[in-house]
Image (cartoon, rainbow over all chains, first blue to last red; front, side, top):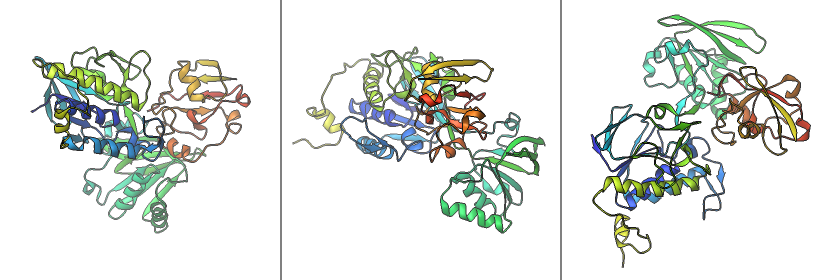
Length: 339
Length: 106
């Protein structure tokens, strides 16, 4: 079990700066994020889009902002747990016991939720029966491609993931590629390759088609697809793979006994604490009168939540406010030699 | 100003006046019309403000910009008349616009 002063859920800009603030005041913390990379929405949704309202930064992209924040916390060597989702948060005495889907357990007096609009999860097929086959015959990500060898695979989607897997799996499997329009949004070279393989008969292309039903007993047997002209085709297939991008979902947070309204968590504006003592929410996921969903607000909220964490992590010490410009203690923490 | 009718999945009509310059998404969110999530806040980055535009209107509204169709690939049950409501900017010409909100966004 990892014993820490605070656990941050979410490695977006708010989570990163909150970590900075915790370390600055001498608390240790670790960060969990469901994505496999640091940066949250800034990296997943708009890495190249310019942002114009970060104080003192006239213009920067989501990626630049993330990289700068990573640089800012470099002196602290903060431990990240990426590709992991916090599934359970339970009170034990005066500590919160936090469990991830990979079985990691943390014990901490403070949990800071900096979860944006929730965790990124793959978008799924809209047909309800697909749930029964999930992780057996229907997948939204591939962990072990060897199971597809010599089988028939039907891939849905028109982006890079769908195209890359269609190309890769066509080497050892029979591949159908189904997309709702005849335009693909992948890299041009990848799109060209798919058309080439389609000409060679290695990929069966079904464009302007969407799934309407599936059949199978225990494992998938066939799927029906329909095109814009209402023409229906029945395809025999062993597996179906859906690559429709990611969607943000509140996920397990909804079950932690917090006051949630419209996917946001109610907090006070002194500590950014939720209705549960020691659980805080900062950034886009928190709500209070006047809340602005701006990155700069997240920074402020994180700074205040960090101070509140101090009281629970160091109950016998008094928090002393210090400036980074003048405090020797802080400079030591940052690894800066003062002269 | 334009009168816009949002038809939610339960077939309820919500007709409201939306100011010029706002998006159809903002019109819905500001008036608490259910079914439009707009998770990314209008950045054309998430496909959770997906609507079906009434056939009569589909060709009258400004056409999709690059990228909107790509995002619509990720929408829940996209159709030919699918649009992201954050990309439709309200003007006098849109007076009477009718959009249907899908059963869910994700």
